[in-house]
Image (cartoon, rainbow, N blue to C red; front, side):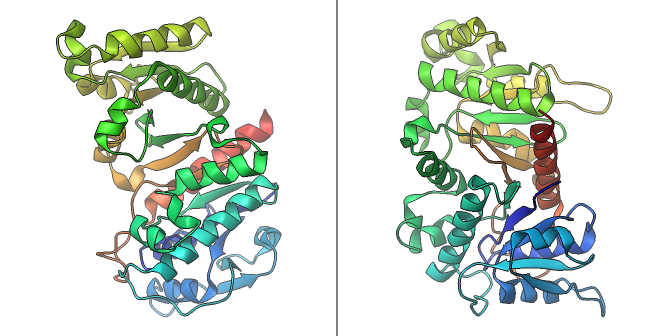
Length: 350
């Protein structure tokens, strides 16, 4: 790896700093070349929280991201974002916490767009704290929308010309969403031929780069039983099927639409049994995320597709209810770093 990976702090009142410290403590080889874009005092508190016996993970303040590549083993490199601040209270929603978390993401995204880092792995934000942080951070409901806006500004294009999609993945299943953070009513209205086709194209391009071959994509219907031939709704006939036909005409390997209650099982890969599809296209947020998270939140990784940078994140939230207790599991964060490395490697090869 020629450039370091930035791990953003996440909301400092949540479990983000804790799982970062645990990842560096428990998986030093996996975390080599990574550094925290965050706050030194917050990470020192996290290191103290996660110490084992008399052994505490030392926090090293770095002046340049590149220093992460030469940092001594068994330490936690931190690049200070903005002025140092006293650690915020655990589990408390605040504008200060939301602002720091957002500023870490903004810095890391801009560094990635400038080519100074190879990827960013984002620890969880708290959406209410982000809203309290004020402009410009309060404009965005989450990481995906914030990164999309920053990438569009960097490229000098309208937001509509920087389409992105969310993919949730673990060792058994990949799911890509047509829509992300919106009401169910709005999500149903977002199921249009153009949106479905665009999502299929973004998924195809991204997975082809990751897998090194033509990806197989299964498409979930919107309605029960995929509409049952129009008895339970016509979206499959009037919208989803025409989008699939258009995608196939471009050479994409697409099948569907299938009943949403069975397509995820068909795509699931288990030991000795490869799934029928490399990914499933889900029509809205919960339709796709429930099956992935049911298989284990500790294994899930969120990958943003369509950005001119590599971004992954753990598939869980800030967990304010257990922040500060030392109970948080770092497995999903370690998996997110691992997936980021895989994407970087394939990008460098191609």
